[in-house]
Image (cartoon, rainbow, N blue to C red; front, top):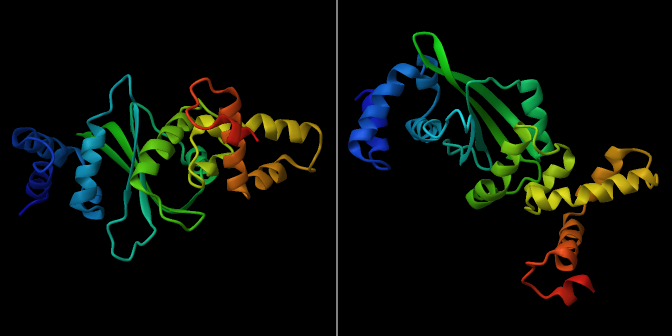
Length: 231
């Protein structure tokens, strides 16, 4: 019962049998022996399905799942997939730290045939700094979109991004807090910009109220009770 057979069997639960066999054959030669030995079949299938989404127009994908081990309570696998480029860990790890993660492990796996690297898989074992659980919905709807943009340098990466996890605000909502941060820094409310960021993130409920206030006052599509949010 080979690695290829186990992979094809689990893939066939998610896609049609013919494509499952084709992908299992392809990645049987594309994954290294070290990768096959290190990761479970469930992780392998998860990675394969993510790798199939990579294109020249979409060269970066992210995945988030709970760890496989029964000892991994509160430990998650955050995985970054790239095609055509390699990421620098020295720049990627600070992005994850700013987003509120503790990084407990890291692994880099090259994917390709006959020495030619086609894609790279970066697997990080992470926990939330808050110590709380991270739902699949929170990861897929809020955390991953923000991290994907941060990796591409499309949005700012600082400690305010820890609000992605708690209280679970989107990157667009967090961006509304940055003018507040800049204003407080400009008038020297605190002696260091890092102190201002720490003060903001230490009170996630106050952040939520500030964001809700802004939406109620200025968002034309706001569907709630404007008066109660503004008062």
